[in-house]
Image (cartoon, rainbow over all chains, first blue to last red; front, side, top):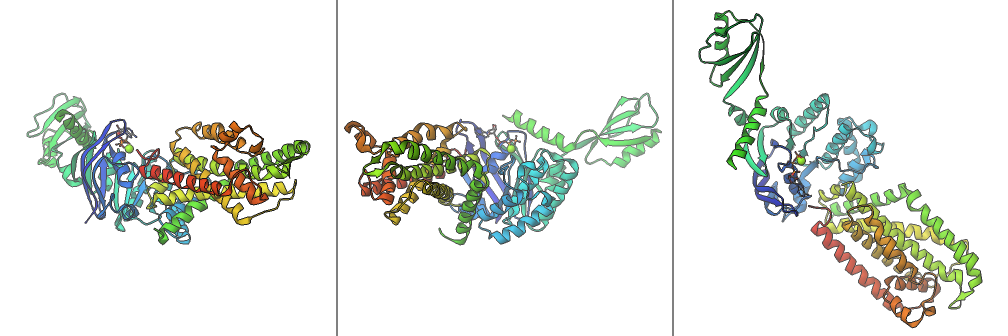
Length: 307
Length: 257
Ligand SMILES: Nc1ncnc2c1ncn2[C@@H]1O[C@H](COP(=O)(O)OP(=O)(O)OP(=O)(O)O)[C@@H](O)[C@H]1O
Ligand SMILES: [Mg+2]
């Protein structure tokens, strides 16, 4: 049984805009899954359909084998949702917001209260739990929505850009929190624009562009698609001409900077042996660009060309 | 449908609705209390004493049930229209939509909030009325039944208004241009016997006339219209508005894309 199974999903908005085309997705139980895509690709639309906020045009969605058309309530009970936009009452307190959400899922008030306190504490919001929610900072509001999504202890957590607008340190702690939740057996699906986030957290990934899934694979597989990487090397002493580096393509950017392309089947040690033999001393080395980002852009470009 | 999960969800919505209007009582309970007190002072005491009697009843006793009814109608409507529109506007209606709550429970939850505010304000205004006159209750069951059904009808109407509303203006148009005139022309301040025949016939198309008169009958045992036709109209409106509201929620009108 999959945690989420989407088949032939189409969405045409009332203004005739085609937001999703024949989307297919399969997420296994216990997975940590990323749905990646540029702005307007259809990520939030997909999530909206899964959680019942957007009416689909056609296709089927099953959550832990519960079809959202046939067995809507059972399907909904399985998921917790953290939306992209703030959607709680600014006048209520975080504690009330989380406890009431528990109530909507049929959790007894006394139990919901305990859980609310537990999750608000874990997410660093307990001090603010009795102030009106409008007093919370942007990052705190996002965390409040995570606490709210967990109060009924769902089997699957769906987060729509959970770390947008969250500072680096907080992002780290949010990642740790999600990794922990995932280890406890909760299936996680998230959307993000931060590619390193997907790389850091996710086992499997799908890329959506203009309403179509253009890639759906494991993170490992995706990374192995990278045929070559480009490194930038800084030299200790300037050189005038770049000697031939057998088997590597290199260019001299300026007197102390070399750019080298290394194919996946090449050994970087060989490169350094060549440098040594030419008496070139490297003091630092870095990736030219985020390799994942490059891959992502390539995929999107191919998708455009294919059209 | 009435499993424990559903009951807890319903309880949560009702509790939240009640705590919403009690938290902001300065906007929800106080204004109707003040304006209804003014009605009693001006129309009841000052002007009323010069009017004399209406259908053999002193004017203040005649208008007291109408004024109580007016506050119930206004407040049950206002509660649901502003609460539901606020939930839509701030998007926290989504909290309920993602949860496994049947739409009928969301509907009953919001309507219960409107009923609660209608009853509370009605009770407060009744207490105010007691400072100006002695209220007797002719038939307790009829009085309570009329209040309950009227508050339900206007809570449902407020819900439907909120479902269609897109901006804040949209939630004040109906109260201002439809509700208020219908209430004033619904026999709160006068007996329709006073009207020329033509306007009596026109008035018979105003549902609020039946509600005000049924309530007046419950309190005074005196009514311009037939009490069973009043109940028939209340039942009809309840059923029709309930169905419309439920269909709209099921379709996701105004709340789903
Ligand atoms: N209610 C709506 N009516 C019409 N079009 C809509 C509606 N909601 C979204 N769209 C369109 O559907 C497309 C997909 O939107 P969606 O919100 O799913 O994108 P997204 O992948 O979540 O983007 P982002 O990364 O910016 O959040 C966009 O072109 C958007 O303009
Ligand atoms: Mg989005």
